[in-house]
Length: 240
Image (cartoon, rainbow, N blue to C red):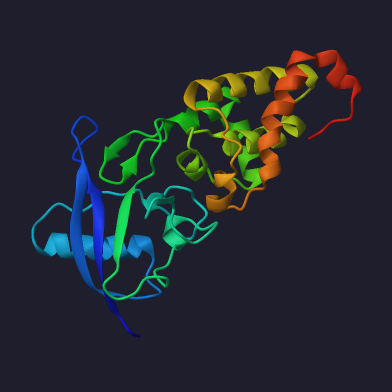
């Protein structure tokens, strides 16, 4: 298989308290079927051979289903291939001599821990507000893998796709209407504390590895209205 040379600008940041910057690495043997994470593996092999610290990044199943991995490639959360996790992003679009920029998922709610690794505690806090095991079941039912790309892709740092997917699937898991309203209210309050407002641009659905539909965004408004006007909402057809 043919190989080509890439220059990869990687974000290096020793700790949350210290400033970071890009460091350039030459990879002479990249290939079209290599993924972004495998490209980082190749860089780390070079660094370890030279006795230098490897690049820290969030790794996982490498099958696009766990949501642990996630970097920004050339300004796009996960990478240029639409609806694919970082571990499933391939280098087929690059040519010999190209330059690639890899940095962390960028969001105010995802502080950098080290290099490309970020803290996604904000996602867990919102899930805990919905009763964590139930919220995680709702997300699984909705197909969300909790990767956080929707937050990083939104100019406002909104988690609306993540939250909306959760809220669409929570109602069947509630014992009654009162529990539904209480749980959704806690989730909405937590999301407003952790994330910014929805930009309405739809960038989130373009990067979502699960291909979640844009209609999920409306679930937040629907549940919010249901909580504000409980009598009317009980009499009206269920939008979810």
